[in-house]
Image (cartoon, rainbow, N blue to C red; front, side):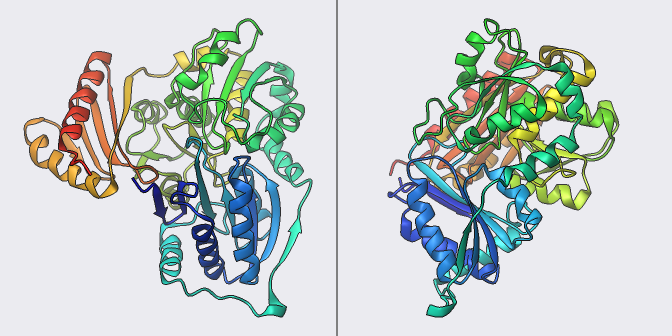
Length: 454
């Protein structure tokens, strides 16, 4: 299976199997053309392959005449925040985020700090496939400037965005696991700024991933086992690019990543009413919270680029996804783990309740997330088969915003070929665990039978 996915906002694949230095160089050169060979911020994570891909990307950017502001090892959301601050034409982050070891990715950032808008991304794809790049003359190649101390600008703004004094007064003990990723280098400054007592886990920068990189209950089990012994008030389990997070409560419950956005949405909407944006397969907790606060809810296809673009269009107050991602447009146009942690701590401090109470205050549903390995060309055929053979007798309302979503009074199922991996995702949610599991099993079994070998 050739594991390379090219989208409007980035390219990702298995290193040196599908994502090679040649691919990285060509994609970066196409992006340089798109931004008129202007100023570009460049950052990377700690994975073993990132320095290699960085060298290819840097060569392309300099070869086309770009001015490169090199942030070195930098979390993707911090780079996104800094793009408009430094008046750059765009940014490029080398990081595989929640993907397993062996994977890496190039993510393209627009001049507003958001993932490149799908329309702009299509232009990059056209340039990439055409392969006709604007290499500069020998005496007009770009220049690279290595930046230091840029995190101060970011954390200054973060302190102003939240009630930092309330968090300092709470002075909680907080467990943080950045999985040895780019965020590891900035945890001490985060803790110092907010006055928290931090217990750092897997916080040494390394190319090795010490656990599953996707923040989910099973990747939070080690932290959940020790948080009570350390008298921790809350635990944060992050993706390697600092864009996703799941919670561990003070009593040792590893909460589903679906609770991350819900906890923050409830907190933010309680202080400021306005539109909320999420994707079409995030937990119904968000639907109920929108009803509770009396605000509009807008749903999009899955992906940060789609959610943030719609947030800008709707002038939304908050947005996010059930993967443990949150964006606050008053701060930046990124799914940002540092911001997510700060908002959870602010909610605990202002409401004067433990994080377990924030979780218990939310509507409860049971959700099952499955995936089936599948080539992209088969994924969309399978959707057609599901629609033709399963939907007519299902007695469900059908939504085609992204893939297929089937809704019943007691829950829903969403089926979608992934844009970032060679899998079909199946998510089933219901008020009953048994129903959620039964529906997920039925759909997964059907898909497995429909996959044509080879």
